[in-house]
Length: 178
Image (cartoon, rainbow, N blue to C red; front, side, top):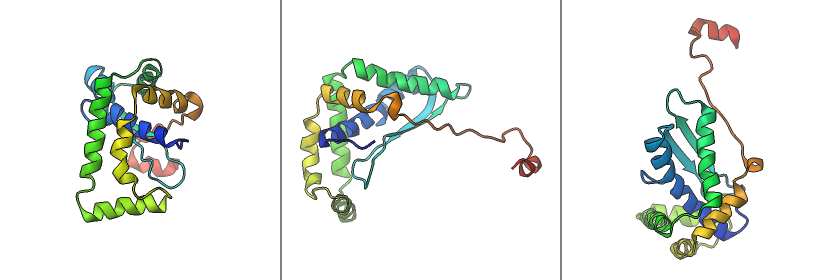
C-alpha cells in the first residue's frame, strides 16, 4: 500500500534492501543460505510511482518445500522486525548500499532525465533526487520497525501462488480439459 508519509516511503525503500538487496540481505542469508527454504527471492518497491505503490515479494521455494512453508518463513522475518530492532551497523550497511545505488543510477544523462521525468509526472519535487541521500541517512532502526508494524499485517497481505497446473498431464489431454 502507499506510504502515508515521506519518511515511511524512505523507510520502506531501506526495508526492501534490508530484506532482499543483495547476498548479505536477510532473506538471502536466512532463507536461502541457512534454512534452504528458498532458491531465490526478490522484492519490488518504488515510491516514485503514480497511484498506490505496492511492496511485492516474489520467492521461489526450494524443491520439496511447500509454498505455505516458504510464506511462513518470510512472514516470520516480518514478525521478527516488528519486535526486534535491526542493528545500527546493519542499517548503516543498507543505507550505504541504497545511496550508492541511487548515485550510480544517475550515471548517464538519459538516466537523470528519466528520474526527473518520473518525479515530475508523479507530482514530486524534482530536487528530491539530490535530497534522497540525506533523507535515507535520517532513517533509524525505530523507523524501520514502525513501518513494518504499520504496513505488514494480515489485513494488508495478498498472496498469490503460481504452480504448474498440468505438469503430469500429456499435452494432448490439456486442450480437452480447458
